[in-house]
Image (cartoon, rainbow, N blue to C red):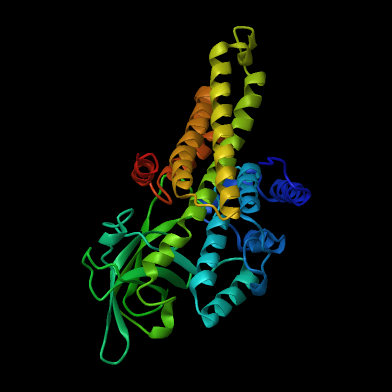
Length: 384
């Protein structure tokens, strides 16, 4: 494997750094967290810079690129911004609809995306009783005599679900029982009668508020279906491996920002007449932090490289999602420890990064589910 960046990737990194230096100083980030949102101008600027088009097919007006480059974009943007933003979610959402939506749905969504840099929909897949256990999903659509469908159920942890005019959801077809594997994907207008939301309050990632969405006898029409009837679960699973890679890439970038700050601080902070960089316990922390960053980075780009080369990453992507976010969370936690009392204040960003990264161990599949996925596959791999 060649670990060096291509000339194009080097230019991309330089462009990201310049963009973030202009738009992501600490005061602006503090304002975003306080307001619970990024400004429309900044989201549009991200699109106009070309970042928001990467990974979208050329026929849709996007900039096709390999998965390794998408990983570079995600990691480096989080690194230089030093915070978790909804920009990754925006691109992932658009790719979901482009992959499965009708030409009319894709055209409508892309037209609005090109105007604003924001998708017109949130992603509503999880339920209170069905996060990792998708077969226990209870939201159901039932066909009526007039050809419409009645939707009932609830979705939770819907990022920006009370912001966008649509929500892309997956429901059981006709029967909510766990044995029913027939699911469909729907693009539901939030203005329909029977749709309501309730806010949920997170401890971190405040730029991206999320909510619960309730559906009470909501009438849907066939043109709101996304993809084939009964293929919703298959569609839901298709992009999970890439989503997990990019979640790790974002965590890695933020953890690297925390490392940058902590490693610089040890040269500035003195106790007992010498910089704390001279103390072996601090050196051990930095060594272990760097090792976790390197291990995460190497595994991340190995998985992305294998995906680009058409190789299966079922085991590797789950291993990555299990190891990477937890390792990055530990890096940020140690950064707080190095700053000591100052790290537990809002005077530094390492505390905010630490809180934000805790959520990455849950999003896209919990650590426990990654062990379940990996363990089953490893047992088969090594069976004699």
